[in-house]
Length: 589
Image (tube, helix red, strand yellow):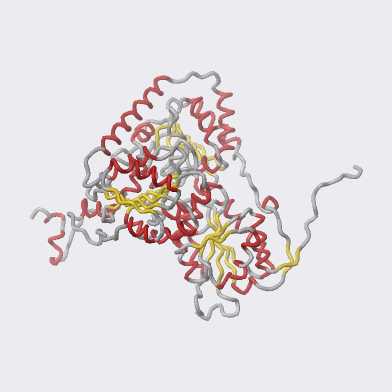
């Protein structure tokens, strides 16, 4: 064979402290910042971050840190990293890590734990964090010895990317100290960066089904965005004249201005999408798990086509055919699989013509829905119809704006009013459904995409869980705009008390401060709005100010969206005489 020269460099072990090994592994992963609140447990590592070029972003509550990194990851594709003090600092992240897990967002949670010499003594701030996080992460990786700190951190990143979700990296606080010898490896040396297209046999079958379909429809989801696969989805759609919907709260997974775009499915989504999907004979679901909540009937339209032949592409085999049976399941990258399907489809069905009849039908469904959503927004409110506020905001923001949305009556209605033409612009609280997501997510989005305006859509209830992070935005000079829909109540739940409990309101009403004045006291801009015609100017001025701004938008608390789950509650029946007057049979007596 002779002498063969190689450019492969031989790796050598380096003598370093465990803290140095951790930080250098983070540097190799391209991590440029970590979010959290400082603590003594990891201060030896913290001390190295500025020299390593890693910024530490302190938040006001650890829950916010993981929401920030969730949004950061959805925009950049790079796994976010959070850290906190052992015990309460880490347990404060439970909600936001659980949300990231349900959102399939890669993340590494650096979790210092009690020192090895005191584990089990119920010492100060001791908690079995591994047990707490086992059910809400893709994996919990416990460092068994100081010499393994870098290896275990590499494992955490490998699993976070492979399984698309958060991983807990648990390290006893005394393991940051000492002296070890280990390698610092590049990511390609310990994790695969491409998952491929999946089974070619399944792809062939999918192409056959699509070629034979009379009424194909596509659902494009988060996986399409993550894989930068929108262009090939367009190509398939245009070849088939197939309408394209977006999966629940992933409204940026297909450009809304495309002639075949019909909008989002799911709660408060697009009627155009639902009326189109229900007639599909073949459904191509790209990069979506077709979640139960995201495919429930809405507007009394039972739209999901259970009788259609479903082709599902998902990177995680666990998500194939979970709530809906499929004809073809493809485990692979959304873009890579779509490219292979498109290639075979064009071979099987070349020289196709645009189906003008289908195009006209799509256009008509979109026209009717646009007319209806504007008509609903123009109903007078006291002082502002929340739909009108959403409509005005959607008309005021630039095309490249990132919109984050919370959970709640108005925040979820936003699913009907924002049309995105660019990907990685819609960052929504997804099926974990916790309040307090939108504002810290907006901060994370601004870190990820500093050149785009960022606005958060949040109700006054959820705002009470996140307004403290205005201080973080001010401190970090991140000019995000919070649109706080102030209706004085937990209105999603209030709607249940209207429909099921005869307008008996328990715990629904909120007495809050003047949020605009609170914002000013925290160093941000604050504006109260009680006329719909003032919204557009306020949004434009807030973006132009290049300063954190809180818009306290006073909306009508009686104009409520439908219940999230009509099947989740039943009309009340009471058996004890004491409660007989509350029984549904006695409401009119």
